[in-house]
Image 1 (cartoon, rainbow, N blue to C red):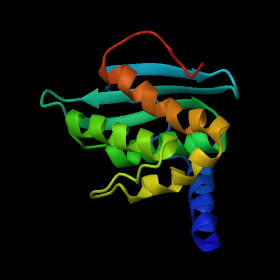
Image 2 (image 1 turned 120 degrees about the horizontal axis):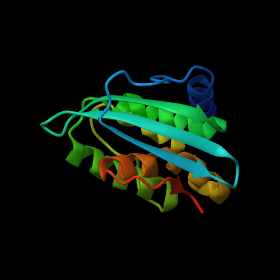
Image 3 (image 1 turned 45 degrees about the vertical axis):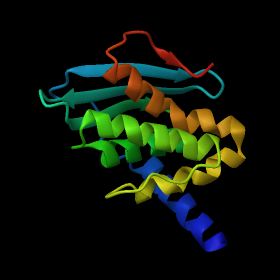
Image 4 (image 1 turned 90 degrees about the vertical axis):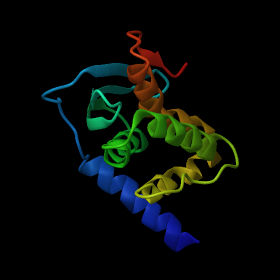
Length: 150
């Protein structure tokens, strides 16, 4: 069990140190901002959703703790190229996994999300992991208010 925990911790640290899809997005048509006042995490999520509802590109900017940054980085990798309705389903499964006794989302390319399964054991960190996910839904809903975890 410790081997898996160590592997998950290493993956989170890798995405924290070298976040994927970090920076502005050249052509975006959706964006949202999120803030976690408890620990100071800030994220701005940029999306390009095509006319067929597919998230063709995703990037993020901001600063935050290792879990928050890794969550944004992994989200951007896992969800890029997926249809919006599938993305919303993955959000529901992810949220359930880290807040309840749900299992990790299954399907092609979703195994990376399992690294956050232990977060539910640290309730104060759940908000760090879910900030970017709630920000994603805000962007998809085209709402302008900043997401706040409080």
